[in-house]
Every structure is written in C-alpha cells, then in structure tokens.
Image (tube, rainbow, N blue to C red; front, side, top):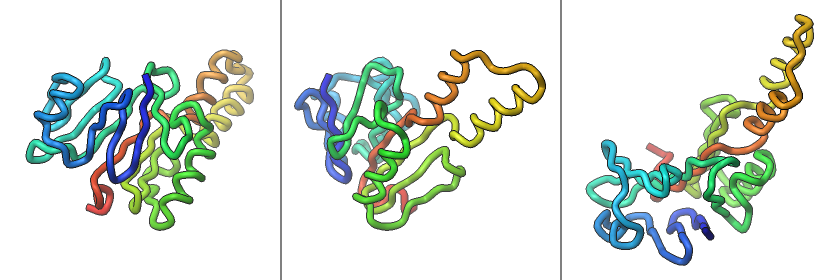
Length: 168
C-alpha cells in the first residue's frame, strides 16, 4: 500500500485522498467505516486513527511503526523505516519554527507543519539500561538489545493535524 503524508493538507492512501477538514461521511465512502472509539476512528487493522471534530477530520495518525504493515512517507522519506534523527532533521527543516519537546525526546510536535512523532524509547536511556545490566553481571541478550535500539531509533507513530493543531 502506497501512503503519502502531505502536512496541512491530506494523506494519500493508494491514490485515495483523505483531506484534513473532510467530512467523516466522505472518509467512510473513500475507505470504509472504521471502529469508532470516542472521537477517534480506527482503520486498516488499527494502523491508522482519524480524529474527528464536528464530524470533520482533525488529525490523522499512523500507529504501526517499523513493524507495521503500513509504511507512510512524508517529504519523500519513509516515516518508520528511516532513522528517527534523520526524519527529525527533515521535519525540523520543513517546519522552520517552534518544535515542542515536552517528553524529553520521546515525542516532538512541529507546530508550523502540524506534524507529531512519537517513539517508545530514546537512545540514551537504552544505552544506560544496557550498561546497567552489564554492571550487575547480567548483560542483555543481543536480540533484546536490537529490539530496544530499534524502538529508540525509529518512530512508532506519526500524525498530521489541521493548521494550528499543536498550538492549542
């Protein structure tokens, strides 16, 4: 499935447009009914969530991360397969303004382009965990280290919202 994110505008899913501000009924005609929980509706095996306000698309979030089936791109970059720092740098350049970091590297909100990213771990904490385990004579297995580093070096979610979404 080909998915492209166009901040402040839309998401293309195999050529089907889901526009920010689009009526929920139009979304359902385009991609079907999702599972509605509160104001959030889940699609494609819960890998896409769309938040609605007054029955209009307010926010679209991709939840599958590096292990998910959906691989969205933004500015021509794979959001989940690219190293977290590389995507951060590209988003920072496009944003050219305020970036919120209220979770110490776990998530960032790029205000000017209304894009948010989240990861489950940060490299520094994973490195500290590895060192601590080794210092107690209980080194982590290689597969666990690879798993933890993957969580720290790749984004788990990426979302795009309407203009001003992160300025509230």
